[in-house]
Image (tube, rainbow, N blue to C red; front, side):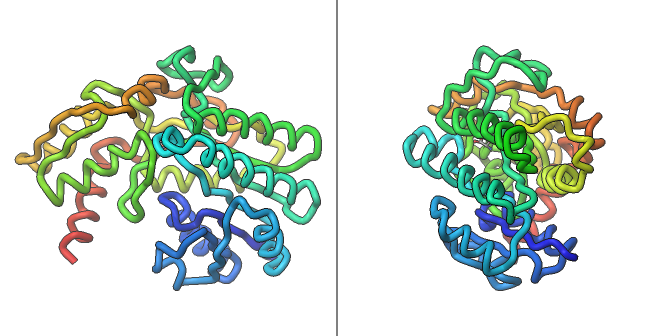
Length: 317
Ligand code: AKB
């Protein structure tokens, strides 16, 4: 019997590409995209789509019932920078949406859940280099607190009720299809757009701020691989550390400049600098490698090649 999937928050940066990939794998009609708005028209028009507010338990429940859903990818969230502006909204959306899907799964109809966590679960007291899977986690952002608490609840629902919930601590994700919104790592996407459109970029982080990052294709591959991994292989039911790249604004600037020699950058750190300073600069993902053979594919220059090629095409048309 084929699986029936619901993606909540399908119009976001990761949701857009994840939905497309899931439709390739499972068939368009077996993947229901949903979001609170229809901002990704390509996605909305290319398969089943439902308007769902992730904070509305009944809306999620009815959609699952109507479409016989057995698997949910919950991608809706307020990210780190927006969360600092709207702390109560971040808490409300990030926590209640998670409880809704966990409770639906506890009720028995949903067999598997994917819920993204983040490097934001770590804080200033965490070892910054090669941050281990199990370590001190004292996040200082509302977003990080919601992800840390969410991880505890995922593990609790797995241990107590047998809910098969799987999770990854995403680093900053870089992609050219849909824009990220409201994150601290967003600069690493904006810089490519501005390089093509304006030939210059004003960076909101300082030049030597090193953060963990990943190209979208690797993030999608990791998500699918984790969801397909045999249940018995998984030793982490909070969230897996995942690593690919670590670079500073200066290093990504140099990677772009190698292809666009006229490109220039200036630095004007804002409130997001303090958030970035509280996060790790590199991640130890040995447990994910061991449990489900995780391995990244894109390094910084390979990613830059793809980003510049695709964005040139996009802005030309
Ligand atoms: C953010 O910057 O808030 C996100 C994240 C690292 O989870 N991209």
